[in-house]
Image: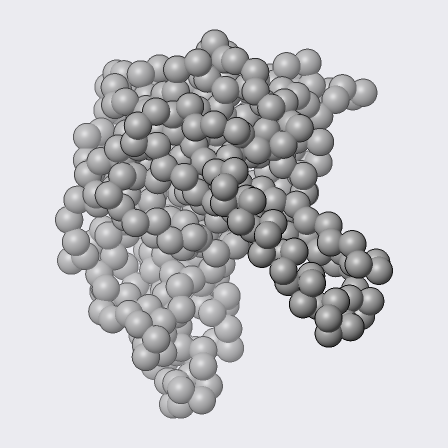
Length: 401
């Protein structure tokens, strides 16, 4: 079965094994071995391990080490998975006229969220957003943050339409909120990608979230083969989207790149459906890379919404910064990966083009993978609309207003 993989230093792995052996030895001394039940970690399975870093200077290494302990008598079974990727040089291709692209974005916006993505309603705890109130929390109360979020979504016109409310602030800790418990403030930001921040930190009693309406929350991964537009899902993956916005603010993504490319082969059709009796790979119908920018410290992203991977889904490998774009519907992967966005349907041809580039075979932890002969540098930019006009060159490079 397919797994998304990468690599880490053999020395670090050897050190880990030595440490695990020490732990087992201590457990044996305490007579506890036979008392530890077998267990497994959801979403973790056998993954390949790349033996060397082919990305050249400037590549970053990111490690995800899932460990499965299963003891019957005194046997320790472990599985270690690591990820490390490469990065692309920044060339862009023409997107055509602004009006044509705006029409395309508006058309595609309604298609990118599947039925299970539309159910998301997540926010960030210990965060209070400011902005113009469209409903005052003193007169607008709920028991849960989800209900508050849904009230904001209800003010969006149609499927993924323009939103009269694009941010919500909720107080859900009964003990700390006291008389403010249940208050649900619905707000409208001047710029929803750069919302006005009032306060953040452990002492803040509020939970806040964002809603991206039509034409909002779209970023472009620029490559020499064309631009891949992605609609972000802040209501499903707020921590992930916050990191992407941070990348935009950095004004560069040096080190970001795509390094693995595998087409649909004979296993999936052109719309991503699995062909009866066909294998599930290899190839595994994806392109994979990293969004770790040089000079920008990366903090592991917590698990967020993990719906079924579909054609166009953009998801993290583990806790990031490695990511992949799926070229097919992967029901066989179940709900193992945090999805933070989706490629606009008309841009999937760019992803397919990348998947067809020359590759060389490699084996990572006994998994056959296809690695690009020439990794593709990425540049990430914001695509914003202002009074109906598409701003193709706008980077989110200013602070909260």
